[in-house]
Length: 90
Length: 267
Ligand SMILES: [Zn+2]
Image 1 (cartoon, protein in one colour):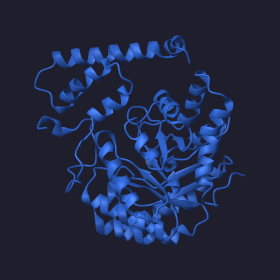
Image 2 (spheres, chains in turn brown, green):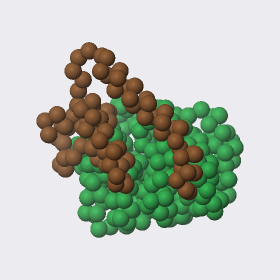
Image 3 (cartoon, rainbow over the protein chains, first blue to last red):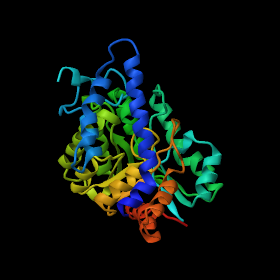
């Protein structure tokens, strides 16, 4: 596809998601309390979008991943939340 | 258009989904064993589930001329209780005799715990002893990268395992290359929020190549889309991919992997 064709197919979708993200950050600012590691992780990943290098999706996924290597002794629950809680102390 | 749905949890879906998939061009469905959304209380619960997968569900699919195959295991979400997990592992050989069982799956990790890892190794050993294909589930979200690395270590440590007979599912941009580079097949799962969207799935295929990749919807009891594979095929068409390339990805590739088990037949 040409760049023009990519824009024709995906610009409106990307624009929509960008505005949703901006509105989410405004909503977070308007709310009370401290937030947690999820917000911290998201804020750390945002600058990756401005990179001039390819592989931005991979970089964002890595930034939101548990970087440790060893299996854990046991789990607190079954679910995942999309960000690594250990980022606070890391 | 024709396609194979290689990963769908049809026990959680309504009969209309079978009809919709058939209408969209589906020619076969494969169903890995998974977590029911709650922990089963005994091995007997798994026995009944395996009967449902291998006996009842194929009959439901057959009403729409759809061959239905299954994969058996205890899901990593339930393998924290190693006593229960070993009891379930003991049930599996009996079911491997059934003509619609393709292999061991979806095994893998969930929260990357030591017990999960131990039971994963025991599943891999079972697959090796019975010469079975393997379908691997990689963990969700923040746990995926670490879990994928641990899973690759387990598989590579067992010299009996041939990478070409193992598919590692739910890959994303940060795991797809390492899976393919190690010689394994990679599955891309199309899911509304987690995993991949049709656009990202095609991006991955365009970058990594189509060689050993399949697409699946993994529809289950959560928000998921039974027609995600044909929708992605349409998206590929919008990008200008040829009819042959689309057929190769959504039909030819799963056929090539699954046909390693001679039981897999499309009438
Ligand atoms: Zn699944």
